[in-house]
Image 1 (cartoon, rainbow, N blue to C red):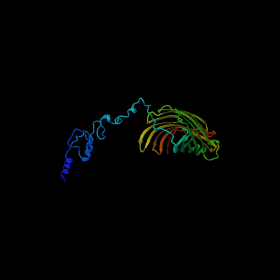
Image 2: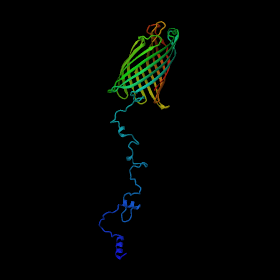
Image 3: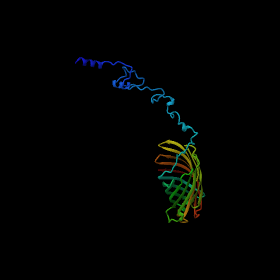
Image 4: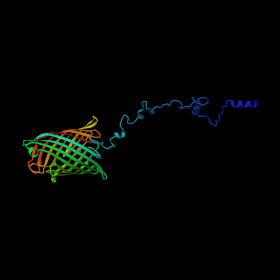
Length: 367
């Protein structure tokens, strides 16, 4: 190696003289630290901010999910409700749906079965008695019809077994009575709280012991208007026609009151009910209720004295019951007091008779 080459190598290896001028490029402290794998050192001044590898400091009043926070940084709904929803000024009154919740029409098929029993009761002024068994079945189908209209139809089957004793056994004996009906109802859309309902229910009512005549047919109809004034008050007004031995025209209506989520008062005629929500237990929702019903039915039957006669039975029913909803089905069981009972024949013979008051046990299930 020549002396000239040696001098050039020493010159390039020597530390450069610091001058006041700026250099073309210098490594940033972060990049230099990453290259060396350690904190900045050497001629560069220490950085005042965090560098790669240092823990991130938590400034005061910033969010840390594992530490108590400044109240100003907390979720505003954690300790209190949404201030917009809690403020009653801009909000409408709360909506209460009653013990049954909102009740839109349930579309599809809805089967139902009911069984009732009335023990033997004395027939007044006659040395006789009567025992009654009831079975009712229905397959209802609700479907949309037009723009907002709903059509409801139900195939109905009813069976009655009336067993008479004493002197009445000679005229009636044991009556096995059958009813085949088709209940059809139309509901209009809700317009400003108003809804109209139209119903027609033809049926064949017979003991199947003889050829049918016009007396075996019952043609029932109804029309009613409902006004939901607000979430608590609903008013109903209408009229019903029942084709029995007597032509019965009944006013229909009353008021439905749902003051909160537990009570529902359906103060209606001819059938009303007051319900109280007990709670959710035993794998279902449960309601305790009292109900009232005015009940009339008629059948063509083979009277011993007058063939192809027609009999009408009438009563009032006041019941205490328990209803349960288990999601895919609901059931009920009740004990009722039956009063105002009477039998009336279209032929007039045997003459009309009244029946003593009696209790009734009834239960049913709906899917």
